[in-house]
Amino acid sequence: MKLKKVEGEHDDVKEQLEDAEKHYKVLIRARDVSVKEARAKIEELRRGIDDEM
Figure 1 (tube, rainbow, N blue to C red):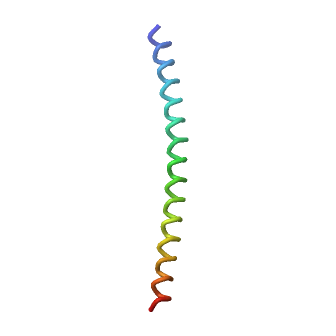
Figure 2 (tube, rainbow, N blue to C red):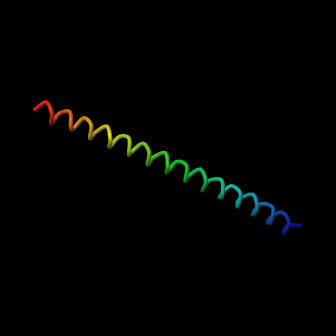
Figure 3 (cartoon, rainbow, N blue to C red):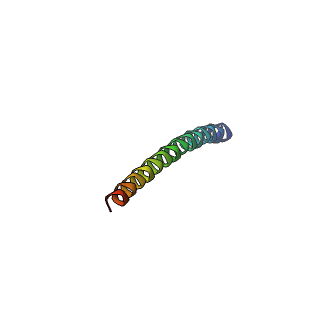
């Protein structure tokens, strides 16, 4: 009886881990996109400042 309960909990935890890993990967991709966009904006501003000088 206890073994079945522990196995069920194990399966639940395993699913939670898999979901968390998927979510983590989505967040990493979103971070990478945000950083790339920010760098592009900074570079654009930098070129604009250089052009004005």
